[in-house]
Length: 385
Ligand code: HH2
Image 1 (cartoon, rainbow, N blue to C red):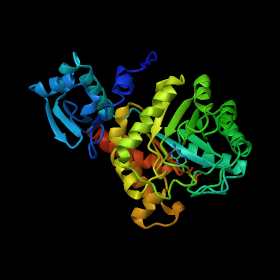
Image 2 (image 1 turned 90 degrees about the vertical axis):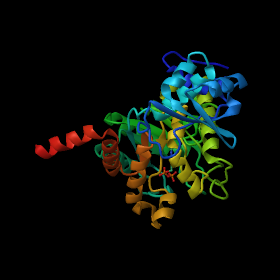
Image 3 (image 1 turned 60 degrees about the horizontal axis):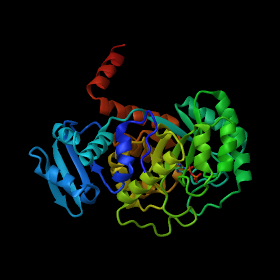
Image 4 (image 1 turned 135 degrees about the vertical axis):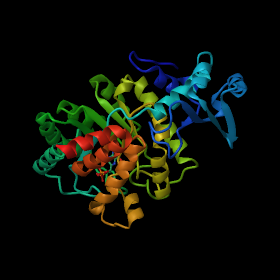
């Protein structure tokens, strides 16, 4: 089924389109940061099953483009101009070009999403902000420190956390959301998978729904988001918080996470949510071992080939402690800043963090590095003033 709401760039339609479903375009492999690969040269991994035999044939016959087989994947290299020429007549080449452009486009905007956990049991700050006044005060501090969005949650999703009812979750988040939305300086998001909680949060002024279960557990959630015109974060999780860290396993983590997010984005789109209001999150720490988290971080440029902004929540997570040896989650601020700057360099646009100030500083450094000469000029001006 094809669906293309007005205003959506053709490229994303091409990646999500039904006939492209089988296409595993792997653009900009690990180590190639968005914007850093010369855009005049194309380097795309794809599964040949995603192209019609005559399309593959035409690509192979092209004098400018080169295809190398690596297992079940093909690596296409050559000048972007050559692929653009082929794309005029070959739909398969069009899809490959679209995936490449999405993966390598410079990040459009970076956003800091400050976490407000109105819970007794969150993994790094459980119990500190259960009291609504303290949660509001914390949210305001995050905004002052530079958060563009504050993400308010009333149920912990740490491994083994006890689920709470919609009534309890709503009572925890609504007063906090109402106050932070009334402040007006930052957007407010609600971290929930329950339509009932999301509806009350949107009534209280939230404009973003962050669902770590990507709309898979409550069939009313996506239609609600569509009807209210809210933005939506769809996150990947393997298993449930109760069992996700027992034995996470993947044959190909990148491909599975990519496939899941693409499918959920398509379902959200079909439910009537404007694609320009969808962001995707690989769900670091949710049903993932250390190696899966690292692989997914390295694969951020590939995940961008889906054409949606990427949200990354790595703040204080245990895989960072596994690397540095820091056992206390609330002492992992340096690990968080280092990983955040790398994630930004690889194309993450929304950064979900417990401390907004250090995140802003890390983003300023990553942004300066990406901008190069322009940033140096700014520095000189600052030094001279
Ligand atoms: N991580 C947590 C919760 N919500 N949402 C998105 N989109 N991405 C994430 O990585 C993510 C998330 C876990 O962090 P936290 O809220 O601090 O902990 P807890 O779930 O224990 O409340």
